[in-house]
Amino acid sequence: MILERLQDLEKKVREVVSLLSQCESEKKALGNRIGTLEAEKAALKKAVERLETERQEIRSRVDELLEEVSRVEAALQVRR
Image 1 (cartoon, rainbow, N blue to C red):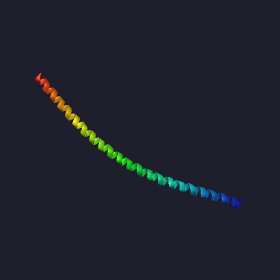
Image 2: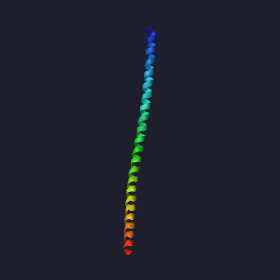
Image 3: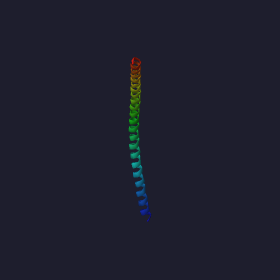
Image 4: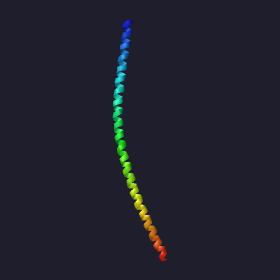
């Protein structure tokens, strides 16, 4: 009877140790995944900043072109 209980206890301890080992492996894998995602996030943030700068430059050039078109239209209306 005591021997059976001891064997059951040993079995449960082994199961817990196995589960703990699995949890540690998953934790390590998730830590690696977090590192990868953080690096990807940083790269995407840089890309967004670059695109935002590019968008602002394009917007500025379009505004300049629209102003030039307005000046030309105004000059044409004066001649009429």
